[in-house]
Length: 167
Image 1 (cartoon, one colour):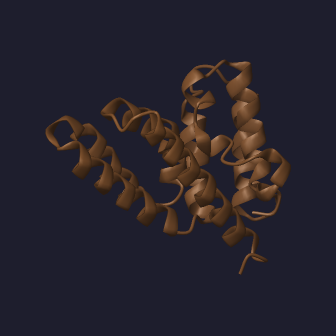
Image 2: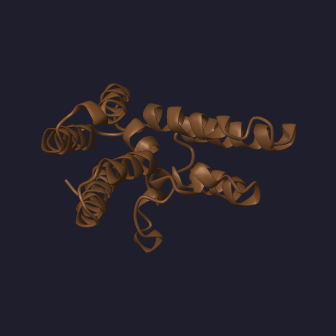
């Protein structure tokens, strides 16, 4: 099964996400740690399931009204459930377009057209996911998009693994 690039990427992404989850909890299981973890993983979660993403967002938003143990158990269950759902080209396109939306006022018309063209090429499976992600990462650095710099989706695992070169 790990010969399939998409399944391999999902498996490795899950391993690294759960590793970050454990590391976050080692800092202390506080609502603040949960909010920070969730904030950094929003786009990654969205790439797996819009529905689970919304449920997790609601859970985090209602965190103060819940007992901490229940909160963390519920979040971990949703995290696992969401990560089990495979990403697809269509889900990635949705996230890539979502990321593009953060640059509304910054990108020139040519830059925006370049990104849209690359996303369309990815949608048509002419290029791997790493191409639009790399281009968007370039604009994240160029325009100093702090929120996006912290998004795990844009760098979900060590680049040396070159996993998104085939997805």
